[in-house]
Structures are given as structure tokens and as C-alpha cells.
Amino acid sequence: MTVAFARRDAEPLDIAGIGIGPSNLSLACLFESAPEIRSRFFERREAFDWHPGMMMPGVELQSSFLKDLVSPVLPTSRWSFVSYLVAHKRLYAFLNANYEAVPRQEFARYLAWVANGLDGLRFGTEIRDVEHRDDRFFLRFDNGQEEARNLVIGTGSSPFVPDWAKPFLGADCFHNSEAKSRLSDLGAARIVVVGGGQSGGEVVEALLADPDSMTELTWISRRHNFEPINDTPFSNQVFSPEYVQAYLKLGGEQKQAAFKNSILTSDGLSISTIHAIYRRLYALRYLEPSTLNASLAPNRDVIQMERNGNAYRLIVRNQFDGGIEVLHADAVVLATGYRFRLPDALGSLGDRITLDRNGYPLLNDDYTMQWTGPRANRLFAQNAGRYSHGIADSQLSLMAWRSATIVNALLGRQHFDAEPDNGQLAWATETASAMPHQLRAGYSDGMLSS
Image 1: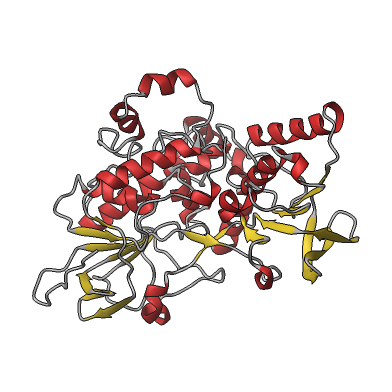
Image 2: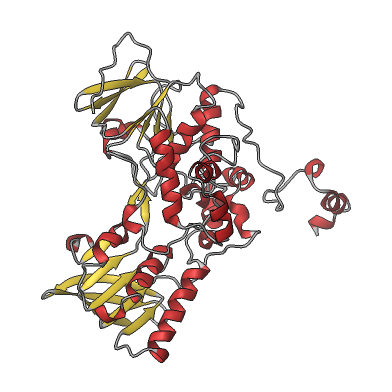
């Protein structure tokens, strides 16, 4: 792809996007309603492709399809999920399918459809370096450059590999982000899956579909049990603007406690996955002639991994009773999650960006990074607020609302109504004048101080 050099005397972009994943795709959609913002987004991949290594048969979205790229803030947009269904003439077929959860493959096709139709997206264009000089950022490519007053980072999270596994990465030790392409040709008799969240469950479910290909399958998790996602109306209130606004007012230790308390609203196993795995294990044990030795082991923490000939030996601590166990495997699948990291292109700006103790950039309420550059040149970050803005920030649920917040910040006005709804739960301590009538009456009577 040819990238034209930007002239120094030309007007720079208002904002340039690094990476085109769902978050920056959402932002690009909303920019259509604010044509005064000059934007362009860049992606090193040749085309949009959302987690291709995890698109195994039957996997489902863990959030509502109404929480798409635009609908929560701009439901009339031509880029909604419903618009996608109508454009492909399968709205009624989709409704009649009566999905409890949308197939992830369907949502991936929706995202690709949007990416193919939007203007202002530049695929096959890798940003090699970003420099800040005077009043703008300079984005350098192999064959050109672009200038912008603001940047938005939307490169997503990277697969997290524990230190004990890094020396062994390869064909028989890999992150679950590569599962689709690797599992079918794995050819391993003894397989260990590490990680008790939804990704680990999907890998285990896929492996159990062909039990004759293995002799042993061990699934280990650091958690107390293989726990379901906390998917109830009240628990899902953490995926709302009103929760984020309350969370932003907390102190550091308060945020840590709130984050810990809400972890299973995001990182648990879907009920359908739990049922599928349990029923499959039941069938293999009692109903079908199978020689597979399947073991589910929660409360396990891997201490060390080492080569044992052509296989592996994992030293594991059982946190339940304190014992030490040794596991033997011909292949290890790491369902160990994802972590945000700044793109390499920002290397020259790294010393100017403030990071928290988790290695995430410190974010202001409007998703701008704290950095030492001019206030007029802002660095927005998508999917980097897991600790600063709450657990929902790394999910799809508040994607459109976050994009609306960024648009409003750029324009300096409330172009989108980003104010929270009237939530069912009162998160923060309210002043007496703002309290519901019943609480206010009790407060005035001294009931709340006893």
C-alpha cells in the first residue's frame, strides 16, 4: 500500500489511530457523525481479523449483540449489528434462531463487514516510529509519514505467557490465541491446559470432541474451582457508565478491592461451556467406551516447567492442601489471558508516558494517558483502563460509550450523550440532597449513623 508523505505545511490530522481492532473500529464509526474531526486509522495487518486463533466451533459471545460498535450511543448508525443482519438479509433467520448467546464467528463477520465499508482505515500500513515535535505527532511508515495533533492507541491486548513457559514456546507449547490452527495437528497423547477461564474451557471443550486422540487430559486452574461467570442483572451493572463514573472516584486501594470483587463478572466460565464440558466428561466416563484419563485440577499453581526428553514435566503446587505435584505432558496449552502493552512504535515516547505498577499507562477520566507532552496533544488509550476505569474496560460492553467519551473530549463538548442512565444500584455514597427519599429520611433521623 502506498502512503503519501504529509507536507510540513499541510494541516495535520486531528487524530490518528494506531491499530484497528473493535475499539478503534467503534471510534471510526462514531467519527462519521462528527465530520469536522479529521481522522485516519492504521493497521499493520492486511485485513481485519478478530482473534482468528480462537474461532473454534460453537464459541459464543459473552455480551449482548446490542453492545456492538455503536448502538449504545448512536442506535441509528448504519454500522450497528442489526444493520449488518439486514444488509445480509438474515435478520429474521437470526431472530428465529433464538440464540441465548451470539456465535462469536457471527460477531467477527459483523466487525469485518464494518471494516470493509468504513473510510479512513489503512490496512497493511505498519507504523515504525512515532515522534512528537512542536505541536504534533509524526507517524513514520516504511514509505512515508503522517502528522496528527492527537493519537489513539487501539492495538488491543497481547497474549500473556508466564515466565516459566517462555523458554518452551513452539509447536507443542503455545498460547490459546493459536488454538484453532494448532489443536487439530497437535498429535499429543498427554495434554495439559493451564488456565481456568473461558478461554481454557473452550480449549478443553474442543479437545474433548476427539477424545480418542489423547490418553490424558489435565486442566488446571489457580482458582478455587472452575467457576461460572457472574452473569446476573445486578452483577452486570459493573458494565455500565454509572459504575465506571463511581469507580473513577475511588482511591487506589478501594479500586483494587472493587476490581477483585468483580473479577468473575468478566473472567468466569459461561454456563453453557461448563455444562458442555461436564456432560461430555460424564458421557466419556459412563456412557461411551473411552480410555481417556481426564483430570480437572483447580487450586493449582505452576512453579516450574522443564523438558523431559521430548515431553514436559510441570511442578505444581496444590494451594488447597499445600502439596506438590508433578504433571507430565506432551503438549501444554496456555490459556493464561492477555495483557495490555504499548505498541513498539511508541518506543521513543516511552520515557514520557507514566505507567502504573501493573505496567499500564496512567489514564485520566477521558481515557487520555498522563504524559509530559503538551496538553494540546493527547494520547488516548483504548483497552488500557482495566485498573483505572474498572473491569469492563477490557471487554466489548462499554466500547461504544468509551468511544463517545473520546469524541466528546476531542470536540470539547457533549456531542454524544455520555451521561449514565438511571441505574438500579446506588454505588457511591450520595449527599443527603441527592439520596432517594427513604434513605434521606433515615439520614435526617440519625438512623445511618448508628
